[in-house]
Amino acid sequence: MRPAIFASLFNVGGPSVASAASHDGPKLDPVQLVLNASIPVKSVLVTLVLFSLLCWVIIGAKALHLRRARVDSRRFLPMFDEATSFESLRRAVGQNQASPFARIFGAGFDQWLRFAPRPSGGPPRELDDAQATHVECVTRRAATREINHLESWMGLLGTIGSTSPFIGLFGTVYGIMDAFLSIGNQQSANLPVVAPKIAEALIATAIGLVAAIPAIMAYNYFARRIQEMGDQLDSFATDVAARAKLGGT
Image 1 (cartoon, one colour):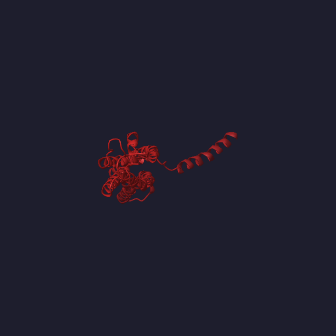
Image 2 (tube, rainbow, N blue to C red; image 1 turned 135 degrees about the vertical axis):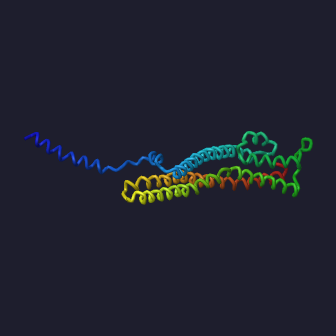
Image 3 (spheres, rainbow, N blue to C red; image 1 turned 90 degrees about the horizontal axis):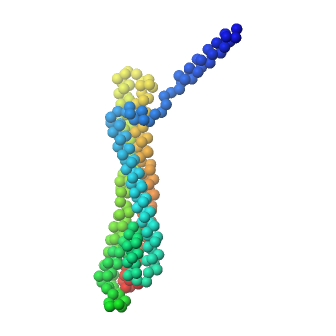
C-alpha cells in the first residue's frame, strides 16, 4: 500500500515539474544573439562597438586635458594678479604650460616686448593706442585658439551621441525585415520562428543606446566646462592687453 502511495505522489509531482520546466522560455543571451545575427546586423554592431570604444577614449583624454588646464590655471591666475610686472611672470608661464591663461599671457607678453622694451634699467614705457589695440587683437586671437583647442574632439563626441541610435535603428529595421521574410519563406508566424530574429534586431538598438548615452552626457558636461572657461579667457585677454598698455604693471 505504501509503495502505491509513494508512486502516486511522485506521479503527481513529476508532470507538474516537467510542465513548469517546459514553460521556462529561452534565456536572454546577448552573445548568442550577436553571433547568430545576419552579416548586415553584425556590421552595424561592430560599428557601434567601435564608436563606443572611441567615445570612451575621447572622454578619458578630454577629462585629463581639462583637468590639467584647470589645475595649472588655478596656480597661474593668482600669480598674474599679484605680479607687479610682466617680467616676473616669465617663469610662471613655463611652469604652467597646460594653462590656456598662461599661453594667452605669453602671446601678449611677446608683443608687449616688441613695443615697450625696458630702457637701460628704467621702467618700460606705456603703449600708445595703436600698439595697445594690436596687443589686444593678439591676445584675443590667442584666446580663440585656446577655446578651439579645448573644444577639440568635441564634434566627434557629439556625432557619436547623435548618430549611434540611428545606426542601431537601421540594424533593427533590417533585422525585422529579415524576420518577416523568414515568416514568408516558412509559411509560419510561430514565435519560435519570429522571436530569435526580432531579438537579434533589437540588440542593435540596445548597443546603439549604449554608445550614445555616455557620449551625450559627456558632451554636455564638457561643453558646459569649456563655455565657463571660454568666458574667462575672453576677459583675461582684455585684462592682459589693458595691463600691457600701462607698461606691464
